[in-house]
Length: 208
Image 1 (tube, one colour):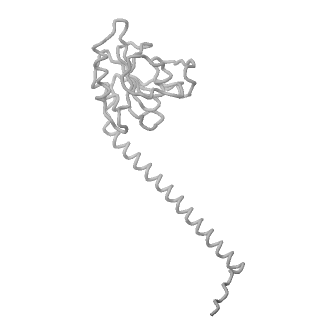
Image 2: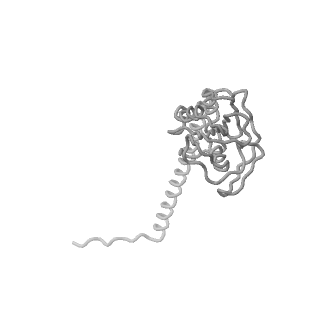
Image 3: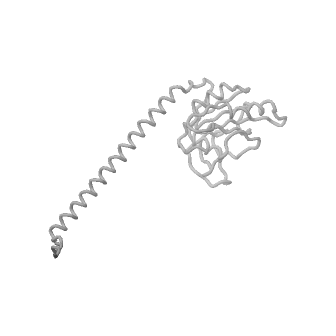
């Protein structure tokens, strides 16, 4: 018994099949694009809602805080000279890398590094012990990092450094464009400043 010969599709049938495939591809591409757009919109709304709810629990600004004029956010090569109109700086030209290990330091870092941290929303606590030193203050600052609350990241976004230029008090706390000078150690004031301005820099990056 002989099999019937298979029939090859005609040119018209091939063209119709190709059109159907193209239409299916266009349809799925459109559906994919819609899913991406809707997903991005949902993510944005959820993200902004979460941030809004988190902002509601941020403390009120300390009356002693200063708002420092923004000096920009340009990048420079590490080691190149950078200068600021206001010291200690809370914005301005900075190196294209930053202090990646957060926490307490007993050695200074050039401003070009930690101003970049401020851009990322980290809080910088500067302490000026002078020539005589301040072991009691540094002992308290060493524990401050562990006491800082965690919001978005698994570790506090805080950097504690020795510094002196432009400082009129033993402690200055900085956020991007914000400054709080303290005549003595005040953990509540520092942590409230942290809660208010942490993660509020002009650039958000992944957790370190």
